[in-house]
Image (cartoon, rainbow, N blue to C red; front, side, top):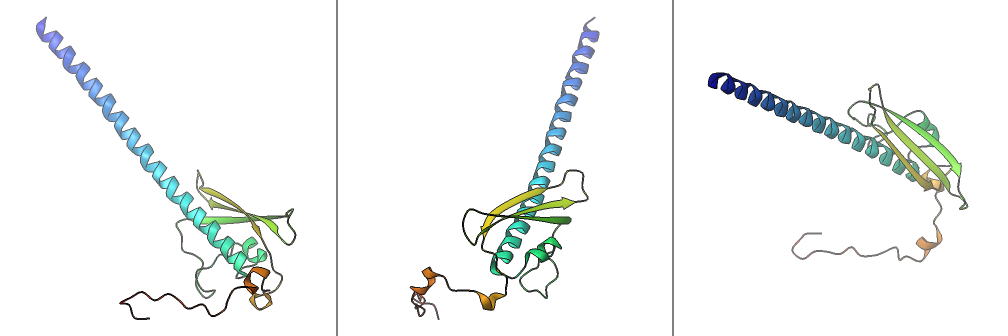
Length: 157
């Protein structure tokens, strides 16, 4: 009778240990999946911000973005190297502010079951021409053009 109770205690202990181990493995797996999704979402956010900055600077046009073109520092660079395939969707609509357009960029991972997605919406002053047609605005007119840069002591300029 005593041996049977001891065997039952050992079996219950093993069952509890196996259940706890299975829970820990599942929780670790979920945490790793969540980290992977977060990393892919950060890549999508970086791509959206980079594309929006290039659009605002006049380096890219809406047509380039609609074609999915997002470049590195130079146009000669290959497209930005990222993990996975990414699709960029651009939508525009007029804003209530004159000369500004609401630009919505949606960057979504392509070809995966649970795609990472990031939506960025900003007011942008779209330009028809290149950088040479950029107009100086009123705020820039009052700024001095020859501002000396601060020099730290002990450092060569």
